[in-house]
Length: 156
Image 1 (spheres, rainbow, N blue to C red):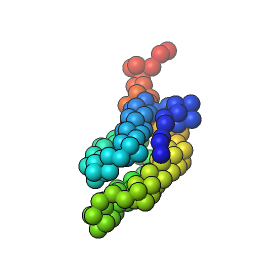
Image 2: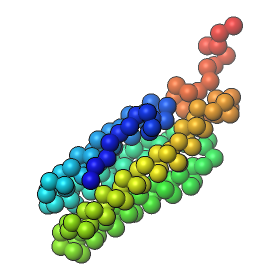
Image 3: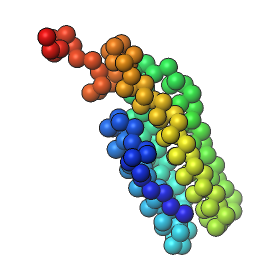
Image 4: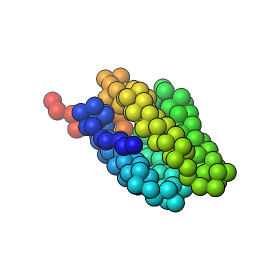
């Protein structure tokens, strides 16, 4: 049960998002490592901490989508909401079962590692490609350092 950040494979080229993705991989790895060594009593606390982190990270991505008028924003946000709903469902199962069973921990670990990998390689890569696209640059809608320079800043 583990997850490792692979910058060659997972880096998207959007510094703010890449830094947060690397951090979430470190957090997930720490959580899964703790569960692997038997810290099952921390399961709910760790899941809650992870959920709070995802809320903050998703806010960053959603801000970048809004600033750039990303056409896939609605479907991307739906994926984010789905992850948060699933986190809450796992917490409910924890309470219903009276604790973290090995089966629940395995299920959460598999779900989380699969979701992260698929989301980064799919929806987040699509977002990063858009943010770096000439369409986004030409329209002047790219957020932050990706926006087109103003005429006064442009070189002759």
